[in-house]
Every structure is written in C-alpha cells, then in structure tokens.
Image 1 (cartoon, rainbow, N blue to C red):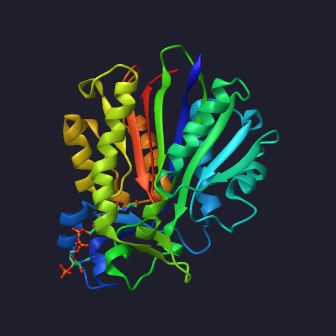
Image 2: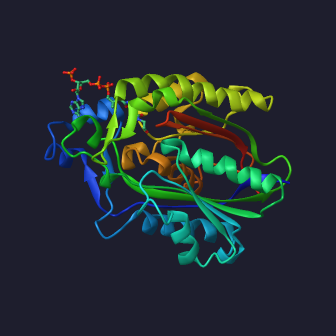
Length: 312
Ligand code: UT7
C-alpha cells in the first residue's frame, strides 16, 4: 500500500469578474492581462463568505468522491495564507463543522506551495500507518488582502478552494516521489505588508518560477526512474500561462495534457492545484494509471512537486 488520492472536490464563488470589469477598477486592459498572464476572469467570494466556508464546500465534495465519512478522517491539513482569523485555524473550524470527531487539525503556511506541503505531509502519516485518512485542503480568499489600487497585482488573483482525501491505494499507485524546497532569501519578493496587502515583485517571482517548476517536475519523475516523456498529465500551480507553458515545453508534453484553469479563476494561490486537480478528474482528463505531476511554487520562496500514479 502507498499514499494516494481517494477523492477530490472544489468550490469557486459564483461571482465572475472579467478583465473588462477590472478595467473599471484600475488602468489596465483585457489585452494586457490576457497576453501577460492568460487570465480571462476570476471569482471573488462575497463579504459574508469566509475562507472556511469555501473550504467546507470543497471538503464535502472530496469526502463524497472518496466515499469516506467525516468521522473517519484522522487529520485535517488546511493550506492557506488567508485564514478567517490567525487562530483558531481554518482546519479547527472545519473539524467541528464537518463532524470530523476524531481528527487532529492544523493549518499549513507555505503560500502558493501550501497544498503541495500539505499533500506531502499527509503522505508521511499514511506511509507510517499512523493515520488512514487525511483531508488536505488548499483555500484562499485573496480578495481580502488585495490592494485594489495596485494594477500589477490586483488583476492576478482570485478566491476558491480545492480538497483531496489522501489515504492508502494499491501498490504501484499513489504518490511515488516528492520534492519540497524553501529559499527564505526570496521572501522580499512576495509578502503581506503591514496594511495586510499582498506585495509582489512580479519579475523576480517570474524568473524563479520559470526555473523552478520545470526543474522540480523533472526531478520527481527522474527520482522514480522515468523520463519526462512518460508524464501523462501536468498540474502546475495556476499563476500565469507563460510560466506554465515554460514548464510544459520543458517536459515536452502536448497542450491537452496540462491543466489550465488559471484562465477562468486567476491565481488562487494554495487553492489552484487542488481546484485544477479536482476539475481535471471530473472532466475525465486524468485516467487510471496515468503518471501525473503536480508542481507548485510561491511566496517564501517555496516550492513542491509530486509524481503520482493515478488510481486506487
Ligand atoms: O502565485 C504567486 C506567484 N506569482 C506569480 O507567478 C507572478 C509572477 N510574475 C508574473 O506573472 C509577471 O511578472 C506579471 C504578470 C506580474 C507581470 O508581467 P511582466 O511581463 O513581468 O510585466 P512587468 O511587471 O515587467 O510590467 C510591464 C509593464 C510595466 O510598465 P512599464 O514600466 O514597462 O511602462 C507595468 O507598469 O506593464 C505595466 N503593468 C500593467 N499594465 C496594464 C503592470 N501591471 C499592469 C496591468 N495593466 N495590470
């Protein structure tokens, strides 16, 4: 047995905000946003919907798809940089709301790489047989830390949640290798300022991402003795189509084999990979036995990747 994905779920708010709508908020254009980022629209949660509300909806979907009852969850890991409040954690709130009576709960802070950190942490508890079911969620309400006067960041981000239940799958399937990393010297390029706003040096983060995502993707595949040509499906952090395209081209895989939900949802930070994973499963893009690579990067700076053989 090894740790793998038993079920996925996601939730995005109903409120669609197009690039044309953004033109009314800051001096920008649909053409600039599309050509520099690939983003066409994003979703913002209403004032009365907080991070834990979106996480709850995504979690219900993942539990249902997995066929696992909330009472059978041993641990809840929530990756977010926009919790309802610093404490209690979003995972604590969910533990109660889901009725996950025996679950331990903690939030994971690794910005856009948070879901990868959560998933790989979950794997350790499953592999050591300490736990049977870990619920991992990536969720953000970035609209509450967005500086609406800064056109270089406000057009990029969106709100949403994605979830996965991690548990035992048959031999040869599941998470076969992983990589995690941190370079705190780059923290100055992406952070939350004293006014609680997100600040980013886009060019520096871009350079880092274009180098790191392809490198980590190749590393996790080579660790298990495969070549990049063997990758069936790629789910990169959905930050910018240009960065994602660089990773795809380096792996040499065709366009239809990469998730591209950034177009519809913008950059949802820790939520982007699990939303893209859940959508890809529902759309039938990932098939049994596919070699799937998930790879993220983000503030910290942080990064993380897994190679997994899909199926139970
Ligand atoms: O998940 C977190 C990870 N974050 C990221 O992945 C972001 C990584 N970085 C990026 O995606 C890109 O750097 C951006 C999309 C943020 C920016 O693209 P860029 O090609 O690096 O543009 P730039 O920052 O070099 O800006 C080019 C120009 C500037 O004007 P000048 O100085 O050349 O006159 C900006 O002021 O574009 C201007 N600009 C805009 N123009 C219209 C910046 N934002 C906008 C905007 N609309 N929204």
